[in-house]
Image (cartoon, rainbow, N blue to C red; front, side, top):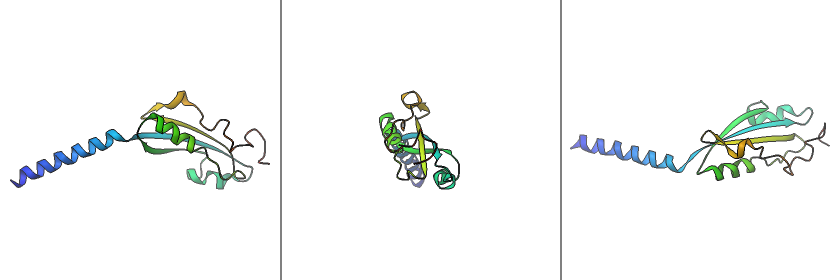
Length: 117
C-alpha cells in the first residue's frame, strides 16, 4: 500500500510540475548598455561589470515577453547610462524580428551625443 501511495505521489508531482511549466515560459532579454563617459563601472554594475548580459524572466507568452522587454528599457540613471539596447527571445525565438525595444525611448535623450549633457 505504501508503494502505491509513493508512486501516486511521484506521478501527481510530475503532473503538477508539467502543468506549471505549460503556463510559464522563458523570456530572455539581451541587454547592452552604453555608459556615460567615466560611468562604466556604475552603468555596467547590473550586468556584473559587463556592458552586455542576458536576463531570463518567466512569462506566459510572446506578448508578455515583449512587454517585459519594453519595461526593461526604463532608465532612471540618465547621467550614468547613456543608452540601452534590449532585444528579446521567447522560448528561443526572437521577438519582433530582434527589434531593439529601447530605440527611440524617451529615457535616452543623449543616445546620439558623445557625452551625457
